[in-house]
Image 1 (cartoon, rainbow, N blue to C red):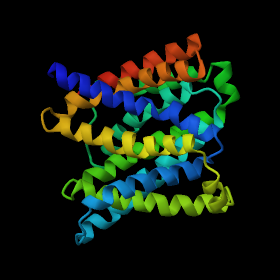
Image 2: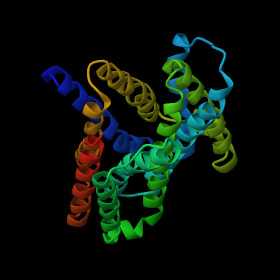
Image 3: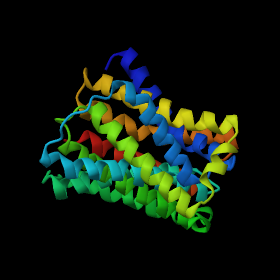
Length: 285
């Protein structure tokens, strides 16, 4: 990979890692978590509308499109921001999000009949061991709900990638526009049901919090993924994807500078095990 493209992929994983501390900033300023996810999806939808071209969807694509939209547009956003909202420390959930890769590999083997080598199984098992090790951190034990929620996010992220494999023949702008609209509609309904007084809450959102929503939708979701798709034009997936393992490092660094959070030794050890296992698991074909 050229130096220019290496810097670009590092910037992409920086954006992905920044989702956790910037999300926390928005939630701390009184945006409820489900509403935050809904507003994020609305930003993605608005940005994609100018490029949207309606097309007739073949019957074989309908269920995968619905599954992708619900898993990625609804479940990933809901579990992500619920976990951030439920946690006072971000390090464990930033690391726990890495489970999306092992979940994706396992689910691909189940639904797509992709073979998993013994080396990959070993690395997947090791990554889960790293997460188990995190559970021995007293601070994590106190915030078990946040850790379980991020595991839910990782599962649905992995499942959404399986559905996306069935949609590779559809235009990515079309699928993501449908996904973001579905995510917004369902999440705004869930926010109204469980968080209440949604319209009044939106009216009271500060400019700073709107900036975190715009950042999450336009910069992380759209710009980050567009740059990733750009890199896929030059390099195979197995060369680009391992860099995803680096996003927790950037997330932890930003968390330190924004919130002054210093991970414990157990968290660092578990994080190294998870990140290393995921990195090499993605490199094995």
